[in-house]
Image 1 (cartoon, rainbow, N blue to C red):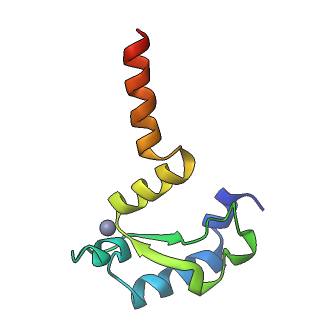
Image 2 (cartoon, protein in one colour):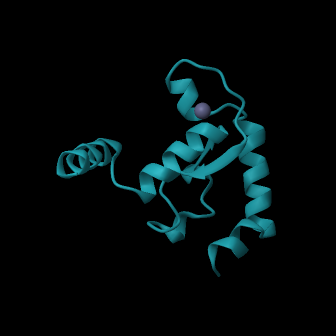
Length: 94
Ligand SMILES: [Zn+2]
């Protein structure tokens, strides 16, 4: 089952709804002392890394849109500091 099918599956929708009902606030914002209503349910260990945990309630966390996009982009790209360094190097080589 690919991920797009997974995210529309009944099992995932039910699990997601349960998590959001139990933890309605963004976990990352809470760590920073900010209260933000979450909108996304994120896999702490991504499905790519741990496909066996994709329906594990304990592997879920509530995130707001902005925290989720930060997490997703940091998983898909190299760390921000490395990107900054690369950009800086590119400007030197121009
Ligand atoms: Zn947040």
